[in-house]
Picture 1: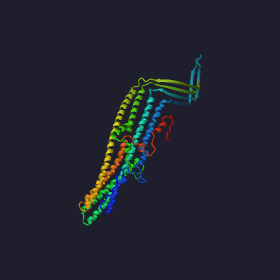
Picture 2: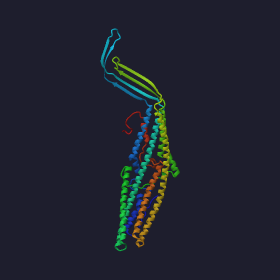
Picture 3: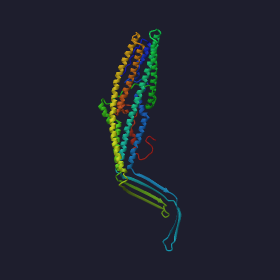
Picture 4: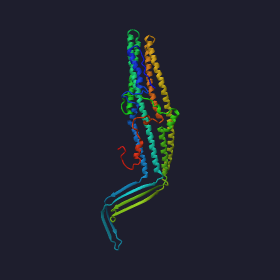
Length: 481
């Protein structure tokens, strides 16, 4: 759909005709939908989305959160690995002893001296069985990673949709500001003509005052439009990551969305990131129940120990010991805390299942809402186009009738304002059309750089996961921190 510019002759005055023609072209030139070729040097919506995807701090923070959750998997896997501890001690020891011998006559033996006792040892412990707690913790950590990735995908959708909204709002406010400025030009020319006619006695002082009032109102509208534009520019800078320049026209993305409402609802229930994240959270809660139940099972471990001691006693200069011990621990009763933990985990599982139902209901509601908004935006485009065309014709007629004395100056000013309002409504409808198409795509869970073809390296959360999953030691993160 494309808005064609229409040059309307608003009066026989060359100045008014030139201003009116520029005003009529504002919507088509500054805010056309599906306009094909972007002006030279203008930033496209796709480029803005790519910048937001790469630089948005909110999105980068969520990626860091996913990397932190990745570390839960190697922490859980550590339960399969041995734990090795080295110990050592050294010090000074003074002894002074008196002993009585068992021989007849009772002789006494005196000993005194200083020693330097030292010990060094190593202990290794390997858990052989703990009620499958390590297995379930590992699976739980993996489910948490999957849930975090879906949360990241939802954050990506939110950032991209916010970027689209910021881009289109700035484009809309820029066009409205241009419309209001050109309207002031027309009203200035209208006031000049009214004063000329007043000077020759064709109109009264009231007509001049009405033109002056409408010009003051137009200037006020320009100031409001400038304020709105600056606000949108600030939001653009926050979301996109750089100051705006010239913006190119944007097109809807209906081609990526399902073709009907039932298929859109089905797609959202199956693949929206809030739904899939809720599904993984159910898995996390189920595994937490198994982990809690595992605390009631016996624990079997194997412990190896080696130790060497020097000068522990005046007569014992060196001692070396080594042992391998299997240990079985069977919990019988420990105050009831384990049973409470199991019950607590089951209640949490029930909550997560209800959260999943809520997520599905919300996804369904969001799709229906987005679908309705898109259909309304499409219809509104056609309605406002017809409104603009009718207002242009009406303004032409009112001006011609006013020229021959059949209409008043106020009638001309009202018709002019109706045309400006219609064009502002058309600009707003075009903005709503594009934003609604992206909102529908997000509501079904398909708003991603890959789907809309952004030319930007996509963040793959699996890379970091595989880098740290089987890491046995090391303090530095894969990116060098």
